[in-house]
Image (cartoon, rainbow, N blue to C red; front, top):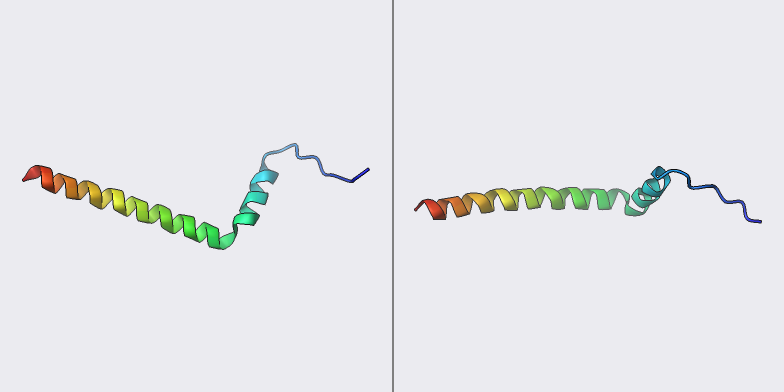
Length: 53
């Protein structure tokens, strides 16, 4: 029989996912989220300026 550890909690799956993602992925997705926040913010301002005139 193989010696397998039981996966009785969901945190082990999350840890494995973060290990695969790595620090580069974390930085990439953080910057991507920040860029989208700026896009939505400045896009909304642009539409408000157009509607006000």
